[in-house]
Length: 69
Image 1 (cartoon, rainbow, N blue to C red):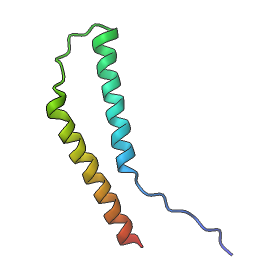
Image 2 (image 1 turned 60 degrees about the vertical axis):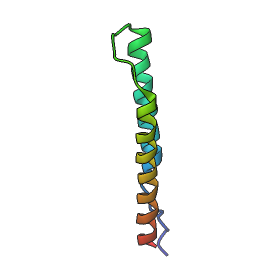
Image 3 (image 1 turned 90 degrees about the vertical axis):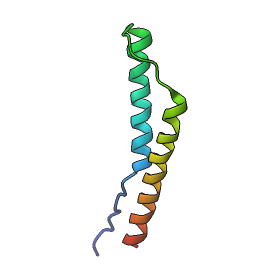
Image 4 (image 1 turned 30 degrees about the vertical axis):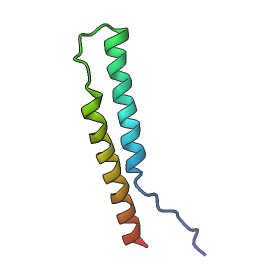
């Protein structure tokens, strides 16, 4: 008998969320701690884009999993 191998699925939502946290952390590190003069982020315009990207990745992941089954 051959051992079963689990296929790993691409976790796009987790990757994007981790990337966003990393970028926000770097932004605040440079601005607050190191004193770089970085333009302020307008969160009113950024958060809908983040939701669209994460939602698209979730849909893509569901679609690819359904095609593999």
